[in-house]
Image 1 (cartoon, rainbow, N blue to C red):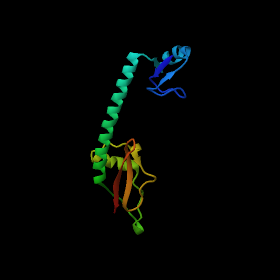
Image 2: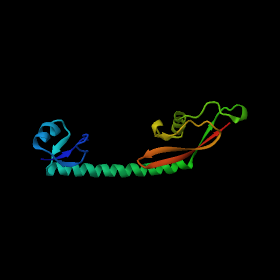
Image 3: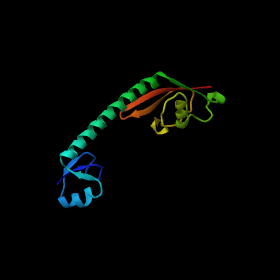
Image 4: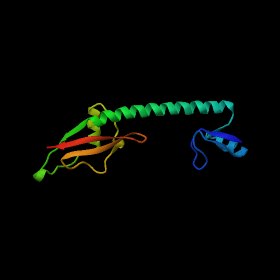
Length: 146
């Protein structure tokens, strides 16, 4: 029996995939537990519609991320930090502080989207990557001053 997977099932199939499986397995496990539906014209139409909607949503999100990337890369984020002898910074700027500064400027960026290997702990300019969408990263300028 041919089935269309409506959920991912480890080592069996991914959502939207069409596979030939044994009748008993399809009826008693896949369909019964909501992992798949039997392949027919109605279900194929539904699958095509869902795939089209997902593709449109993806292109819309990509476009929004590209616009946001251009805006972010034009801005500079300034942090005033306390320094000691020899301009050594007390503490550092963390992803949470950077997220808070982004929120103040009107950007809805989450902490997990900010790529920082370590906290910023020296004066000057630093480049920080922000993941906006699949394969779309913005590199922002962070400036630490006294």
